[in-house]
Each structure stands twice: as C-alpha cells, then as structure tokens.
Image 1 (tube, rainbow, N blue to C red):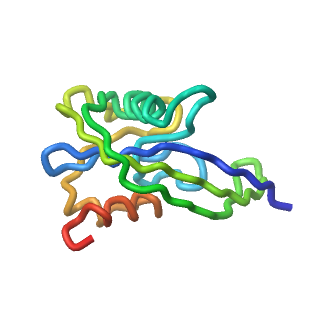
Image 2: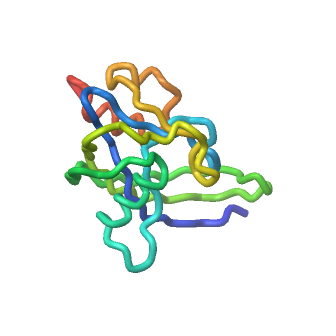
Length: 145
C-alpha cells in the first residue's frame, strides 16, 4: 500500500543575463533530471528565508531579488530505493529570482540533493531532461509561454 505524504516547498527560477540556473537531482523520484533549486520550508522559516537558504545550499548563489511567480500543486506516485510506494502531493511556491553574478556557481555535487548545477541559456533549457515542475516554470518565462 502506498504511503501518502504532502510537502510544502519553495523553488527558484534563477535568471541571470539570459541564462537559467538548474540543478541535477541526486535523489528522489526525479533522480538525474534537471530541476529548479529549492526544497522544503523548515519549521519557523518564512518562504523567503527558505528560498534564500535553498538557493545558496544548492547553487552557491545569493538571491538579489525574488518575486512570487506562481503556486503549483503536483501529485505523483513513485517507488523509493527501498521499494516503498509513495503517493506524493507537493505544493510548490515558485519565485522568479535574480542574482547579481554566477560567480561561485556550484557545478559539483553538494552531497545532499544536487549532482551539481549549471547555467543554461533559457532558449535551450526546454531541450533538457527536466522535471515536470521545472519544465512548467521554464515554459512560463519563455517567449510565447
């Protein structure tokens, strides 16, 4: 029987001079796919504090500006590494984020959630193997999106 879990997280569509910053997922149902930096809001954190922490942890970048873009609900099932089936419901608070520079961008694995990050020209991002949520976010800011 599938275990049920709901998660509330914040995610950053990080844009800098025509590039979007993505991370490669190291674990979970979307391992190996490109995703937005972000994650769970910790107890006592505001969404903005969680956003800044997650962006820094996963990419090494500091948020300069952040604007609420959307709130999305994602429902999916997956089987974890231990064979447990999960029925997942994610509520994802999406921000459009700018950074002053890509200096310090972590391209190596962080030992936790990311196999590394990369800055990709926005027009090329849609051609990558993206998580469904990252694809939705990238399409929102693409011309004609």
